[in-house]
Length: 190
Image 1 (cartoon, helix red, strand yellow):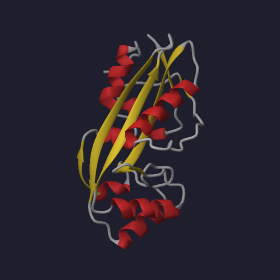
Image 2 (cartoon, helix red, strand yellow):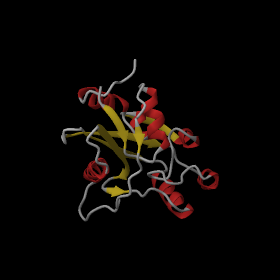
Image 3 (tube, helix red, strand yellow):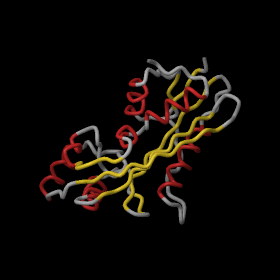
């Protein structure tokens, strides 16, 4: 069986892999510039970042898995919230709207082949009151999250519907990831 390296600092991605019975041999955080290129669509941005993260880790003895999640309203890419102002702006924009979450997965195999999948999920938010936004922002759960929220956390109560992959919204679409891994000879648990 092929060993796996997870090219991610995200504890959520590691937890999601464990849900499908996969424990990476190593976890290596990558540090790449995540600034969108001029004219880059959210879909293209997510795919490029996943590829760059996978390529940033070179291991001849293992497959390297990387992913990136982008939250978008139309062609507008929302940031990974780093400040309260970021989180507040994201939640205000998402309030009462349907937005898209793109999660790209890239798998670099030991022979140098790159396999990719991109999952698009539509997420509808309820209309948020100013108080709900302020309370959520005060909790700090939004830090480092694409679009300023964590669907698996307290923000789950804001979500009216999800059409697509819930695990993709959290950060790693499990169906597509399991298929990529199995195709590359990485053991996926029962």
